[in-house]
Image (tube, rainbow, N blue to C red; front, top):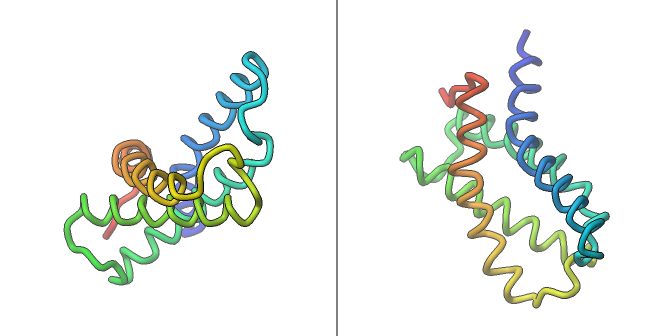
Length: 129
């Protein structure tokens, strides 16, 4: 049942952004609107798909780095960069300067992917090779 491995990979990647999104919705209800949080529904879905693609790339030898930490950091930074560019395209975070989005989102993505998503991957028994 190969598809169950893909489902695990998807949920390992999507669980943290989904919980963070729910927390941001709660905070925006308490403290007022936080930019345009409601329109970020696509980030957890995209993070789950990004994790599936990450495992596909690793298993087929399509990664630039051989070190486990560098693979995770580079994958998270690429994810953050894509989210920053996509947020420009869908006009998200209009209150945050463009340069800050392009520089900060990859750093956040790299560390979240390395420490949070890697933890969920390990907890679900997902192996890279």
